[in-house]
Length: 225
Image 1: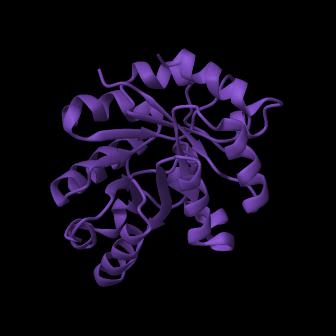
Image 2: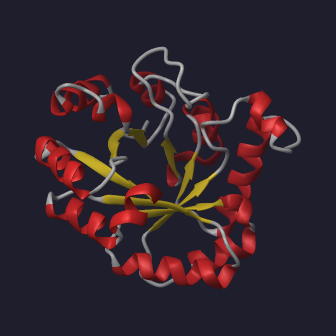
């Protein structure tokens, strides 16, 4: 089973709290996720800031557009020196292949079904079949088209790991330290996700809202050893 690594989501309003958080977490063996909220405000400076603190960056912008547009976006992301980027697998095989064809690109991580979905909301959004079926169908198509990793909820992680083996990374958002009533519907604890075979667990609020973020992150690292 692969070693599970901790990725902290920099889901903060702007660069000032991002810098404060990075300062507190300095020295811990963690990766960082820069998502659409912070990147829309701060742009590449958000990535540069994380790099200044020695962090590898997952640029989570969930590209989903015509193939040439996504190809160009991936090429531009490569110039930022990020470790990985995300794209929606429902954009289709041609789009994914165009992204995968970019030279010297970051790792491509394919988004399956967002962790904010449960069975009811998934059906209301117009999708047919179960969430699990959609995850596996999208993952199959994504792997055939050249992605390096699959982003899914921890509840699907074990099956995705079994299906694709160690050559494909499994990335799981939707990590919570206990029972919650927030917008993450298909969640697990860090230890559960690690046991399911996740290569990366992505955690935001349990660390960001902690009184001592470094202590919270260190406790999670201990839990997933």
